[in-house]
Image (cartoon, rainbow, N blue to C red; front, side, top):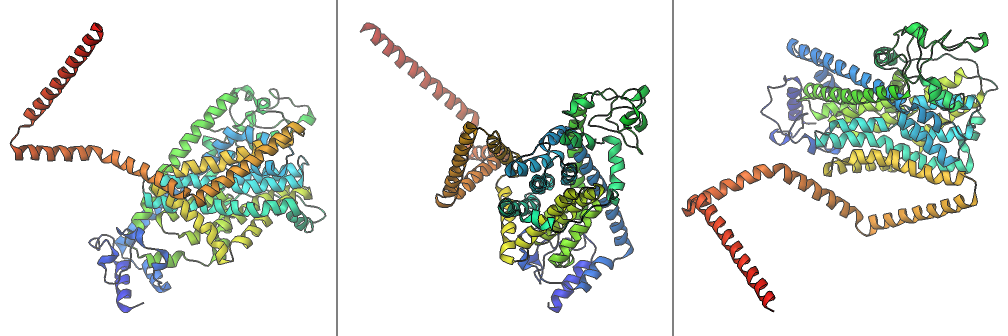
Length: 614
């Protein structure tokens, strides 16, 4: 780096925001360096970003006057405020999803299935309850209770790995107001999806054919597993109590339905509190059936919404509530959580933008450009602390949208999140005394490690998920409908289609098997035809052209009032130039139209009279 560039950079990093406001483009700087907030900041490619020294990073971070430190303190407090409520909204979103989808998720997980159905059920259950940690814990518990086999549990955790990435994809839609931010955020979110899908595409058929995960983990199992303690991360301890005062989901309902202890959620209703007192002791304490205790006499009963020992019953808990009442409460909280999520996301992005304004991209890139292996370790550590890969990736997604974290750095962080989320399953296995439960938890761990080994170390393989994510990000430039359509198709439509096809083969009748075979052949041929059209018949170009037409039409409709006013002003100028008053033109036009109408009417009468004479 030249001395001139160093001086320019140092000045920009030490100058308070606003004093260099006249320069808003790298084209106006002698060195051509780009600063955060420049008008052409989005045009800079990662390979164009210069290298900075750690001394420059330290100076930009730590060398400020008293006024700047005051602004930094206020900004940090604002960022922590929005971050806390962002995490609170994510926790509330998860609780709401468990209340709304808990019964369905428990029913999905309850049966022995074929490999394809197991994969799809794991994905759907995780997408419904918005938590792979909960899904894997339930799967491990099911295997420990011998409700499902180890092989089925392996396919279920593979599906859970796909379903967990739906949350940060939803979060990326919160940056729809800015096209450039949405492109980066959606790419940062979907790189997680694509990696998980690619890993399943390779390892799922390999497991079906060879059972390599089963044999690998079986060789590692001890003779027995001692009882362990449930561990709760520090972030959960900070956020969960507040969220629990609003809505607390009863995870036992999902487990009991999945293990077959009850047939449906109706067994938990109506909710009942002893003496009408709404607290944990009178509502949620469990009956000791061995001691002859009865519901309604010695203990209460709760449904999908439960109470907490420390915080009591949440605001949306209702004594005497039925399943419909709890579902309505879950739906209301879901809407509230999504609204709060978007508001906090916008606030967090705004605070970060103000804090980073004027910062050189070289400094930002140097500070966030860590080694891939270190990134994986960081992602795993954060996920272990928050006990949720969804929270980790959802918090990082806005930073990708802002451009603070490059897509190349987001990938190893999400891979680390995949590793970190397996700790929950391992802890659940430690609580069980069944080695099969530990085997499924280990399969989850080695499935993610295998995916990393395949797709990350080799650069040519690593570029596949990165290019796919960038392509999806660029598609949002053409239409803002891409993210919601992507979520619906990838996480719900395709899985439900696969589940429907696999269910035909589970009927074990000749008719359904033949029908399923023909449908599978039809689907395969349809996919092949689509690929041919997409690649060989310019299908991609046609789709892009269609999206461009829709974008142009929307832009035209937005500017139509202004364009009409512009045309009217030009017509007025033309009328003044010709000397013909506008009213007179309008009168002549009206007169001409009336005359034309009279002529047409006369001709019609003549024709009608001629026909009558004939």
